[in-house]
Length: 463
Image (cartoon, rainbow, N blue to C red; front, side, top):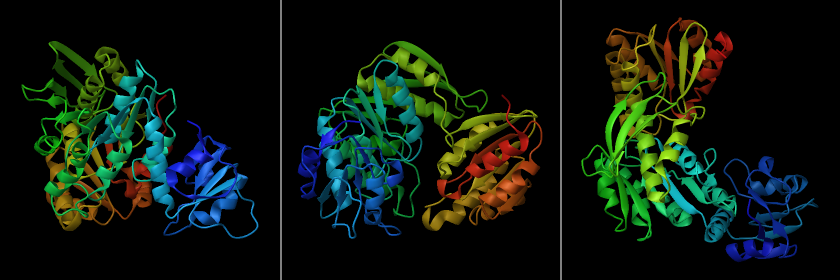
């Protein structure tokens, strides 16, 4: 990680030095004492459940050199060698992230969207990594706390930095985009998600479009021409752009997608008079579109496309992001447990429909969260669509998914309801048969990854 002095952090935050020398060097940054490294800075965030100030002593014992606090800690210590007092620790962390951004010489890419942003981020990072040293967002560090930590951790010798940003309300994308100050910006798509926090999809589009609105004029926007909401929002940026999609005018024009789970999706597109074909290790048309978005982003970065595409093709999906596991008996499990919404589920079902297995198509679906007053209707529609997509067995997990189960039963397919993921983990392994293709899809809060773990534990894994 890049080194900042206590004096640098003092300057960035505008705080008051309670103890320690400004010349002390800080080499890492954390908001969780369990993730602290020696010589690190600990930001004592006040929380609704726990207050970081109660862990300043733990931070010192973990080797923290600096604590950034809103009040001087009580008691006799131990304390880090240096402490800075600020009015707002979260705001101080953001200011430190902005300070670190000024020192980043790498080309900075920022990605947001309703779906596919993490997979696209991984594809972009892999593609750029074929010819450059790349820093990227890790885990779910894509919010007001995570992005500053990602900026602070960017190595001085990075040649490219790829950051994912998310939101659940208006204004957040603009705040994060200003913090990251991207050279290249992409909005993957606009879908009906987070409707609990927005009145309409137009409001969601406007919030995602904040990335284009705050983009520097000399930065490059990457525009999905197949998404009408993205096209409209992209007009908020007057600078250079790279476009992709099926439109004749697209810089990267999609010609074909093979929509399948096994052995993975593939796509063909043209760019600058050349045709490119790529096969992925992740299934689904949605993944193919993520790869196309990544290719357009790589073009916007001005790096060679062919080695980048080879790196994208070799990219393994992360757990919860479409990873496939083969089990004895020719059973294949698709772990797509990280997130879900109506559009993403419909895409998965379309791929399931197009992927005839030796046995049955099985869908384990968890509640789709943050959909607002239309939640029940969305889940009922999901159950009906599962039946239309040749799903033979549906297991709905959670109170909302019971509506999907009832709709699926009305459509004439076998369907079971599970109260929660733990209940599903007990029942799903016993319901599977040899040859089944089992897709497990749900919002992160449902924790369906334990169903994946139960299937592997019960049936083993093919080496």
